[in-house]
Length: 92
Image 1 (cartoon, rainbow, N blue to C red):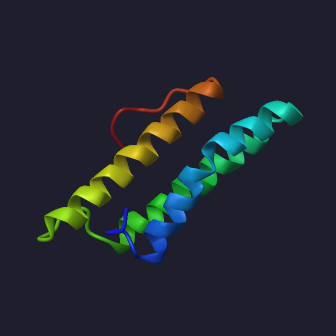
Image 2: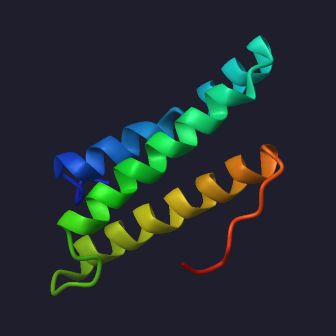
């Protein structure tokens, strides 16, 4: 992900990287609120990224990296919500 150098993208990447740790912590402590808070933080960080940077652009490598970041955030948000017993709409 060397094409994603913006601080907003790095914040999202750091959160995505921590997903497994958050799951382990939530299970270990039997606290679903840990996962819920994480998902709120991830959604907020992605929203900031999305509002600050165009996903589709002229540099195809940057565009592909941003598309993959978007896809990855969506997968983690959906999986996390499913683990909490929630459904996420396909489109917003």
